[in-house]
Image (cartoon, rainbow, N blue to C red; front, side, top):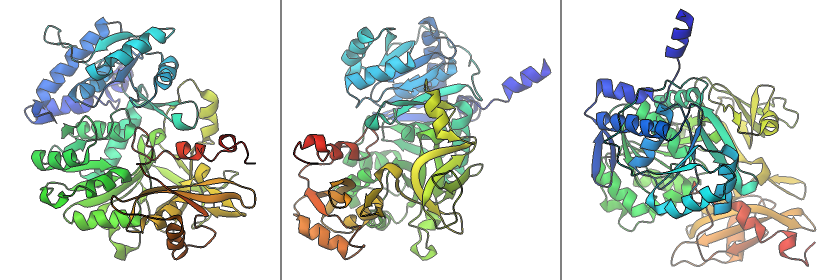
Length: 515
């Protein structure tokens, strides 16, 4: 009996941060959004009452709760009420087409589907199309008449979330992450982020994505304050930071471009900002340097990881962004408790300085892909998770991520890493954004192609972009052809450029005469 009790009490629980905040700082602000603020005691009460409602609607431990909504305080309540009741969070990518949403819901078979007013019609349409329809619950339902329930105590290796990823390249994969996976990630990243009850974290990325979700869990773990925006809008982000005293924010490179493009950027008081984290896609050196110049009082911090690793594997903290230290081109070093190696095609480690596949093992690696045991077995090999990313380690353990393996271009027998070419293109002062990928070529096998969007009011030509690259990188790496775009490049729900969509125009079936 004693061992059983100790085991249950010793579980790492994502809800523990709420209990700790209520014990230590109940009157501090938990959430700021749309001009309103909730204290930790009020937030905890609402979470416990919403958990009661979920259980009365039929939720049982281990059941999935899908969420289709814009980011809001209600979204955070749905996160934690599901966990409080012993359920599993399954956020729906609101940028998916209805067919993609339906595929995800058929896969995770949620007991309940929470939605806000903006997605009420889609939620009803989805529910009627599924073989096992979930119960629909509007997220703004009053909770005052419901009693708060005690925490169900889920934790440890119990699955907490299913975040779906990879739908742009095939069947979406439900990444099963446990309480322990996500709690250990929160503890790991705090050493570089300096998270505490003084933290004011802005969530301007979509909460259906783990990049934002993991920071929700980490900020709550340390009793900080959440500032929630319904969506990313550059000027609104700057205004929100200035108004609410934000100390931490996570962006991706495309967001950085938008932020620096706000004409009166310097007019906003961003002095409260301590850490701007970036990741999810390569940050061009010129863009990184521009951020550092415009935010001299804020430290930049790069994170590398993926949904399958809860999400962070390595970090490059602000001190290593100093060019004099010679590491600012890297993604940093592995966090505590994480083993990192570079392996060849036979899964054997390669020497430092050699490019191979980045492989990871440790307590933040996922439990597996939901309903896909074969894919899980192919991804986790001999205890190591195959990331599908190409990279190399230096003699000090710093990781350089060179490309997605599937994005590596083999042109005339030479390996070309698209990130390197993109970095060269971004050095051009007239470039707003770009994407580089291989296209079929009868001579070279694959030819390097670039899609480039000029900055507003600027013009670029194919010849100009190619000449610019050839002055900086080898001729075989430089684009053989360039498309000058007249509109922003397509993005995923996490604001990453979708090369898969750009490639479609260059597939042989798109041009019947091409072989």
